[in-house]
Length: 64
Image (tube, rainbow, N blue to C red; front, side, top):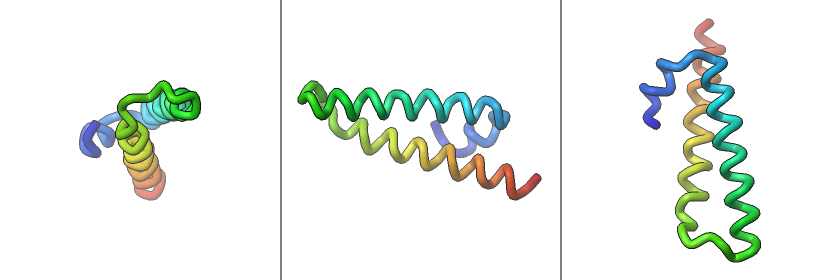
């Protein structure tokens, strides 16, 4: 999801999506530890996605 799309979401929706992404990242990390992950680039993608959401969330708090 691009930053502009995230900015159009409400704060509650951003928090909900953040929780979902963090849960996916946790499960992916657990699968990596057991050697079940073939697409390791997904870990990096999810971390960047979390950072994107957190940045927009902070920007919304500052501007309000």
